[in-house]
Length: 125
Image (tube, rainbow, N blue to C red):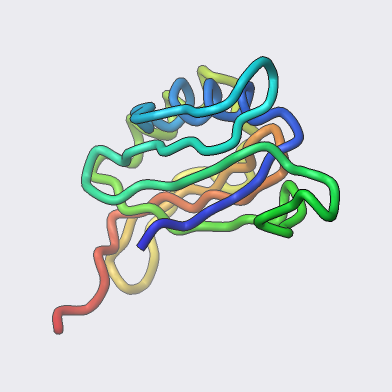
């Protein structure tokens, strides 16, 4: 699964997601400030795709910037939290322990998207 989002300033968002949260830039297509397609890999597997918002009728992915939300599995929540704070992420909830055994924190990126990071990997199948 590849969650997708759009951004008003996609290049700045890419830099932020790499610096603050630790995504790895895999590929970025586009010219100048416009990003037609970007893939960012997550260290534990999977990743996201993103691009610049476009006006209709040239909008192949009609989402609004800042409306994305995701839960991302991570191993060291406190270290990731410290990295996000150092990079200027807007923290919406500091690290906390859940009643189901996860350690989580939440942040917003500069576009307003909500990111929740935690150690919960889901129930065994």
